[in-house]
Every structure is written in structure tokens, then in C-alpha cells.
Image (cartoon, rainbow, N blue to C red):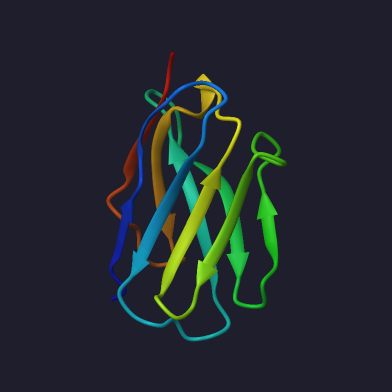
Length: 111
């Protein structure tokens, strides 16, 4: 079972940036897809971005042009660079491999 640990969440002002990290306990067997999800209070968990082992990325419309997903194979780490943050981005962010979930990291966007 792959273990995932998110970090990098916190408080940001509207228009600000945060970079989330997801540490993956071991190298994944290809092909694979990595995901970032988020869940705001009272709402369902929703897909934010995905990244395949081939390097293909996909984004939810509400983050396109603002967020960027990437990975570092040397450190088995996935990232989510979040720019131009909005209060609506406030949520717990989770990384997901298709079978494993991390514990989540809280992102709060407020002035």
C-alpha cells in the first residue's frame, strides 16, 4: 500500500500563492495517474488536477490557468502550485494515486 503525505497548506490572501507537496512512499509502477482533489466544508470532494506517468496534465475549469501540477521522480513527490488564489479555493486538499489517499492539508484563502 502506497503511503501519501501532503504538506504546504496554510493561510493565503486572495491573489496569493501556495505550493502543496505530496510525498509518495515509493516509486509507482507505470503507467499511473496522480491526482489532487479538494473538499470544502459542506461540499463533495472534487477533482482539481491530474498528471499521468506520460506527463499529460488535466485541470478542472475552475483552476485552469491558476494551478499547475507537477512531480519530481527523484524524490517521489507531487506538487500543486496554486497562484491567484481565491476565497473559493478554501478547502482540504488531498493527493490520490487511484488506490491511496493522503490525510489532506488545509488551504484557507482569506484577507
